[in-house]
Length: 158
Image 1: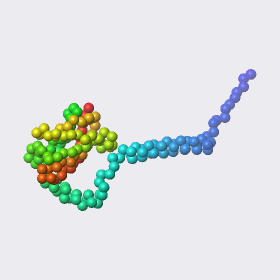
Image 2: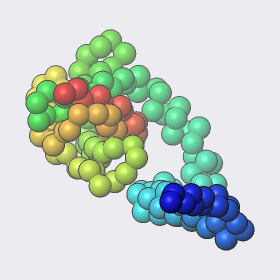
Image 3: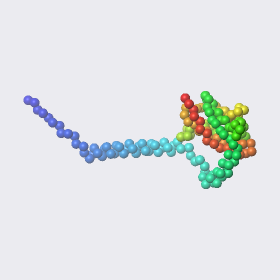
Image 4: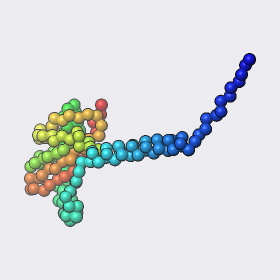
């Protein structure tokens, strides 16, 4: 004797649909929460304390900085970063003071404060540089006291 047993096809019930919806939305919400946490935890913070006050002095500071006629070029060789500041004639500029923060644009975890020294033609400093894009946020002061601020992009190759 040979008996045939036929199985009834599985039913897709409302409970199954509820499980699929809860699982899908759970994943979406979890990813959104993770992305929001990552964005907030890596945000470097406030740029200026009062943007209105900063805007009132912007044109004056920009005109003074442009009057200097300086241009800046950044490069990296090995574990050394180099800032070349030149005047309108292409001659190297030795500034009264120079401070800078070297870091990534996306987070502050890799920020460094290189100690630049003038070697007669450019400012050089040791730095730990991994491949990729870096920003140098520099503040230089001219001999007459004029402040020169600039964000210089530095590309480090493998």
